Length: 166
Image (cartoon, rainbow, N blue to C red; front, side, top):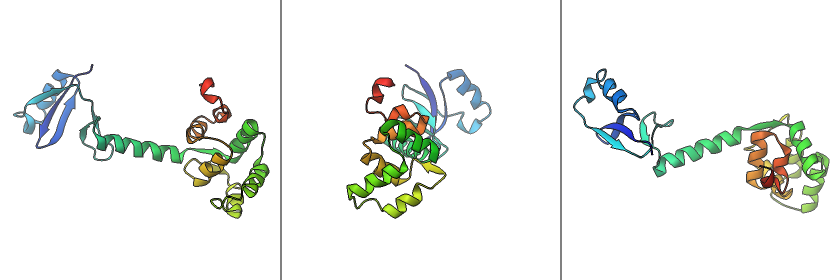
């Protein structure tokens, strides 16, 4: 279990380190905190990307911040059209024309066929594009499978038993 040392001023953590002596040495260069108590905790302390302040990493607010950051990171993952079409072909034996036919035959009102055809002409496919989830669901892919595929560009992540391969 890691022990962290920190100094609070008001209700904010102003200095933190897992090395007690390093924190004490830092006080020589920051005399405004010299008279404050050094506290000890087993809670993780990190520098928040959002506020650029030290925070406890086990708080609901920080966990939400990290979830939002991860969702943004995933949404920006991209693959080429060839990567995506090749993966669909290897996983399902279908190309983009087959995908369009599947969507047309599904009679789903969630997917605009003309807009989908335009999307399929794109050079890059971004994970955050809502068509990825909609079409992926029609093809039988879970959001987790799609995330892993976009993360790795490994079509086996799209196979029904891909969890056994991981």
